[in-house]
Length: 96
Image (cartoon, rainbow, N blue to C red; front, side):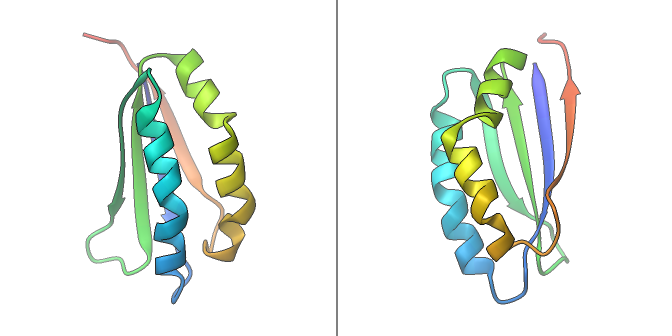
């Protein structure tokens, strides 16, 4: 299992644009056959910080997600609404 944990810092006054851009990513990621879970969460007490946590069946499925058109398109336009580069941790775990 692969766990992806990403931090997204949103520019003030760009939250709606950010959320609209996230919708197709969330839908496409969740539709992947090897996706276990993919969620966007706002960090409590932080006005402009969000986290994405994704669980993937294996590295092959995760790598396909990262290389997908929907991720490429999101990253290309993310400078319009993100105030910092996306930071992420990828954890390789065992299925139990």
